[in-house]
Length: 335
Ligand code: SAM
Ligand code: SF4
Image 1 (cartoon, rainbow, N blue to C red):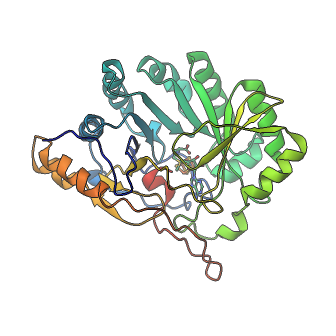
Image 2 (image 1 turned 180 degrees about the vertical axis):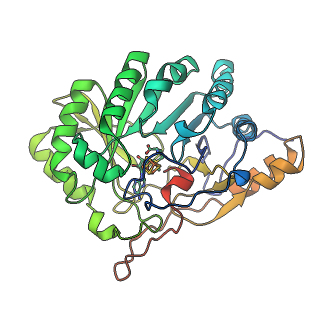
């Protein structure tokens, strides 16, 4: 079976896979889930060994970066066995980076083990430094636990980037404080615009939506934002905050098109591959994975899927209905 790299029809080389290792979570963030979310039956979810086999197939096809996400990746039972196992690709040099996006609630338990397995950097999602607001946003979360987790991450030598979703009327007055705090703690930060994914019950997307173009204008009154040429192949545009020396990214999928350089695909915990976060098209990799012990069918299915990667997304918030543009929730593909 040929191990030629994965190149899509628009000549973008697929070098980055985000893997949702579980759709479950110990939080219920208002922009991500409803309070009474129904999760997948366990039988449908790939085992950790199957996830390892899938990720390894991608690495053999030239993928250089893996990000574990979810749901909350660190609530998956025994998740460290997957992280340790994937760490072997870092040691062999086949993989440049193994990382994860987490809500931080389990980091006191796992930070040191993650570092020992070869993880160097993590993204931690945090929208506020106010504990009451934190619980209002996450419904089930406790800020103190995340703060302890961040300390543990620093102590373990993990680099941290904070992901903050900009929410109209909720944390918009706190962004200056968050930037200053990230500067003090030595964290980079990325601001994310709310994306229209999944029905979130009573909360209306348009009520949450805060355009980052507006936020950036406001921040520039207080901070010196120097354009940076730092790129990850993703939808973020980065600046350096002169006063803190830290990087500040803006992810603006609704107001900006970021697709020409897209180098990534997303795998769900049931083995569905999404070629674009903003489109419904997907490919089932679980069937070819389970159909045979060698990877020929799987590799064929991956190549076929990549040949369908679309040129770009078409996110929009339906202004009349407030309906999501993409029906699945963010915890399915992990953002
Ligand atoms: N549970 C982990 C966490 O919160 O970091 C990983 C999964 S979470 C789905 C990944 C990222 O997506 C988080 O930074 C979260 O804030 C963001 N997110 C979730 N729903 C979103 C939405 N509708 N629009 C924009 N970002 C969203
Ligand atoms: Fe859980 Fe992350 Fe979604 Fe919040 S954003 S509910 S922490 S998956």
